[in-house]
Image (tube, rainbow, N blue to C red; front, side, top):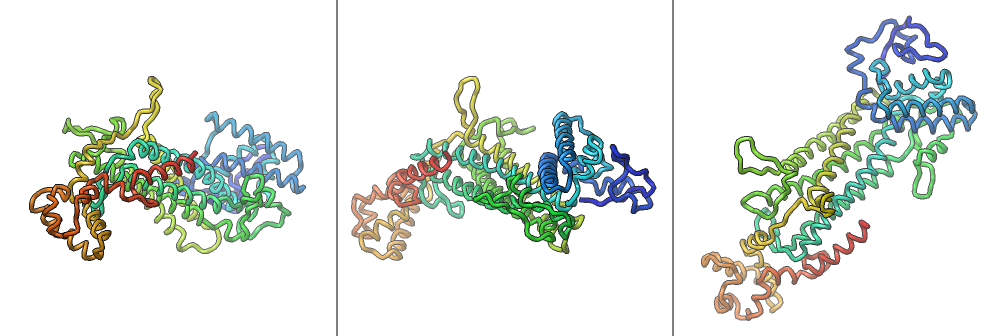
Length: 495
């Protein structure tokens, strides 16, 4: 955090009160910091959200200092009492955040010293704001990752709910946005469940590397005090799967590392990309040219000039916010690329993009879970869906574009024709159907047999949308039987 200047001739803090105009290094400087520099270097009005993590880290540090005999039991008790009062003040909204104290750490320390005197001044023994802020951000981010994991689960459950209701609904599957093959609408929804499941795995993986303790590294070189850093790590829950303390092993790296923030933002960016892909499809499907779905009015807006419009603002905004999160990732990478060891003031710029990434991702996941899965109506006690599926429109669209052409090729392969020859044969059949403005399934048997004599009456089963769907009954396929297997797997995984 910032090491701002202050007046060199300012009166020394009294035994029970820290002068809010003076910083810890005030005796070194001969002129006050300008108001412009105060505003430019201050972070308190955005990093104050770290207050719970800051207090938790300080209490764990104080407990260890007392256990090691570095501070007295009386000082430890005073620090606990003071931190309890500060917590109450912040929660009540009566705590005064002061620009002159520039960040969350000094604001809390100054108030603690006002409340408990010298015990508050002793709290900073064996640590620096460099390792303190690194610890605070890690503690805060760990909690946010846990909340994001819950929201990812919620969204997956919403998608599974919609899929379960639409296993037999036929949707045209697209490649290059051209009709390719028929798929189950549920199968399509479960593709996003797979994406968000991977996002949840990535978040948990990131959490392991976030959950490592920098505290005790001090400014950059460690400290001369006999700290028990492992004790602090265990107190803060910074442990591995076996309960072993997770502690940063190099003091220089500990205070300057922001890999964990970059890695989280990368995982968040990929998650937002998945949201954006879903958003794009919802936007397309809602348009009159497709008409596959309707999105509940509470997630749409109208036009100021065109009274007929219902605009998919939520999906569109999510698509836009994806660029915002990806931009934060690029910003953090650029922030770190030229920094020498160890801590530099540049690192103050890590918080706003990280905070905004967390806020944006949480808000987006929360609203998408509700928009996809619906919400409980207190009046009826029933869940009202956010998306209404137009099954007939989907099936009609699947009949366009000769979606079962591959099935005819597979049919011929099973008759002994090499696939490449079958592919060529079916291309001629599609050309004929195009000429006659009909589907392959509408071509008379005699016409089909003209393309290959082994085509028989049973070909019409494989040329039907339902037959095509049911035929793909292999692991991971779109056949309803396979989709139900996947639904059961996801239900068990998400229970």
